[in-house]
Image (cartoon, rainbow, N blue to C red; front, side):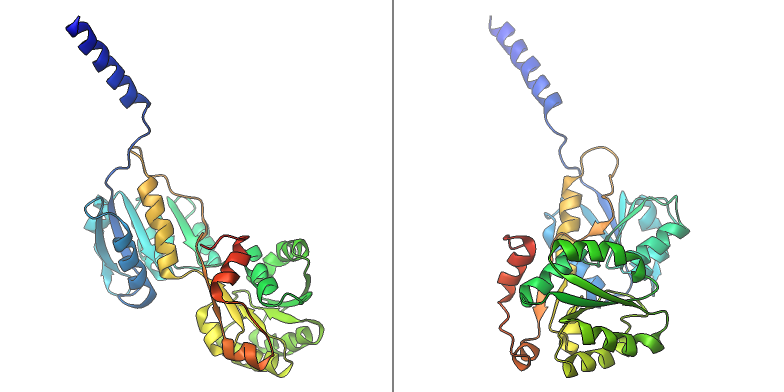
Length: 307
């Protein structure tokens, strides 16, 4: 009788093991940075701190400007690159699954076009359009007309942007420019018919050379600019929504932890799920605006949940 019970227990335990979901496996992860310091280093440090100690092997395989160790790449289960130049330094020399972070949607699209067969995905820096427009609504609840300057790369977003704006009860006013020399005049035409300007990443429409002039015009017209980076806010934009290196690292750590015992499964290319906001309180005061605290803004953008 005792032997029969023991045998039945063994069969039951074996069945439970077969039915149990696959456990996360230890991965050999190669990290390549675009440069040794700054945002790429902050991302790598955050990722290392988020993963359980000794659960995975993270190895720095080099930097785009200092060279990459191909031996480390070839033994890796997956490669994580931080910065556009980092993934460029990797994707043409290995078939290993590669997850790229800290690059724009357009930079990733360009790489995908050049290397269509590469096992590659990305968590891009660009914020979802709805997230950006909800920031407009949160900081400027009375604004109904939002102007946006679109360039050669961002112009393809015009229809989607108009649809999302309409769903948020915002009327979109847009101008397209093909060269930097036209940016200031186009932005002033928008300022005449808008309650605020929304900056969308584009190498022509929102480049560093023209940003200061556009910000000064927006201040002169008393029409705030809503942007996509903390640096823009420090330069004079009213507010921005963005994902920090630490935000991106949380998404990557979650993805790594979710991997089972089979082949590495790359996520679909997307924006980071976590984000933060920055507000230039001095600009808000000068425009007579009472802007909510950062946590309240994040909750408003998220639909009531802080992330």
